[in-house]
Length: 207
Image (cartoon, rainbow, N blue to C red; front, side, top):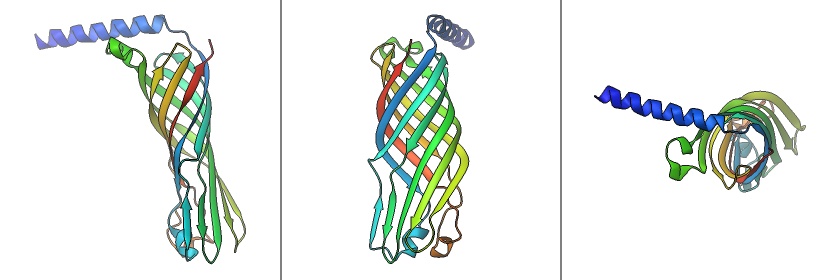
């Protein structure tokens, strides 16, 4: 009996999913978000400056993106993310600036197919890669710029006001490498920070 119930539930879900996909209009979209961001390149810069002041940026991150929605459950998206500047002030002054350009696939679950009261909500996960550019300005040594490709990932929730306009709350992350964990790493290190961005913004689908 339980197997029959599970089978019927699966058939209902498949039918609802298929019907939703058939009435869906694919198309491009764009959006912008602002919020809390942080980069983590390690504690070596702080240790090397004999820090009197450390400023780790917070509510100064933002992201702009474009994408194409193929079906209700999948889209391809590319975005530019700017992360807050980490500043270390002491015997030397160091600034670490980072931005990323990502390309990700998004798997989306419209909650409409689960419960009608949630018809305006969707949740998603995303994954892909990001070009990461990091500029390290040091008052006592030469400025260094690092460029690399790193894994990108994230998740979010969408509330749709209309078929075209939605609020998007998301987390976007990039996994870094080569942390600077001590003062001796500063001159020889080549860090790419781990980046996290928690944002809220609007998106517009062009149909």
